[in-house]
Length: 484
Image (cartoon, rainbow, N blue to C red; front, side, top):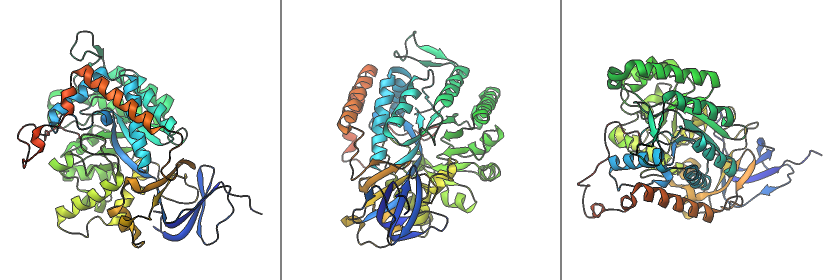
């Protein structure tokens, strides 16, 4: 008799996103160790454990290719004033944020991801704009420890800040005792974090590299220095084999990144709005991927040409850009947003079909991250990163057209069960290894601490401008240079 598998999952529907894009009704998935051992219909094989509840819909674990660490605790600060929000980010991230801050924010973000079926994410260690907490490895160590605690996969993107250098870090943002940190020192910290934490398929703590996006105007003022930094960044990437990402590409900047030697098949570029023909050429020639953030502010002030990129053979995936200042980690929301965003642009409901929207945060995202042979689809031999949705809900009924149900009607709260590497992290919306109450309390306390330390408690309250007006009359998100 065949030895029993570790786990059998009975499913009303399985969306495999495999090469044949099979949709299997009344099927089962067998898990052995950390991998998918078999997928079938009819009588399942023996198993040590069975998950079997009515209406379960199986999907590959969702992948969020672009988000920000830290943002979860400054969410919505500034009441829509983008310049103020960026200032607060710098005051917090480069000033008063301790390792406890990064730990509390990461725990909050990871719990939100887990409850929403996001099993793999790329999370920039800072941002808003280009404030990367790599003066010491402490913030990165805290973030990586939370990945181990939660059991999810996270690429932590680390790198230097934006010119000029040195960057200043310390609790007194404008005080004389702030610590100056050079580009070289930040790169040394990045190399250290890579050496100790870059193991996305082992301990699930991947590390990626990031460099600020520069445009032609920057080159006119700082060209030699930008070229020197780009050469150092590419050398470290080639030495370590890490993923490279950037946040905030716009017209012409991708072609410049190619000229600077930054692009390769191991590069994934965020936002990427209003691209030029030269940008398209650079993507085709280098094999770099695009991360589309349809819910981000940058997608309001410009447009990422996703259908055109796909038709040009460029790999595109989805990112939440969460968690600030007006969005979360719900990838179902971002799938739906992407479809409506591009259909409205073309005034054509046939643009970006449902299946492609799901591919953007499963197999296409896995391809962009260099993990398509391991995750992103439900196939025998791949890692058992599986999510199960509760399809027995009025908004997901009747049980027909599963792609339509998932991409247009499902939301994060429909996720019932989550597996990563074959380990059941959540079942029936219960997460036994994490204490939600403790996570929320810790996050609230750290948020209060850093806003008090910055003297910014008032910036957490909404103004009267939110009511009655057709638009805000003071304060606006800045339209140039924003990477959120």
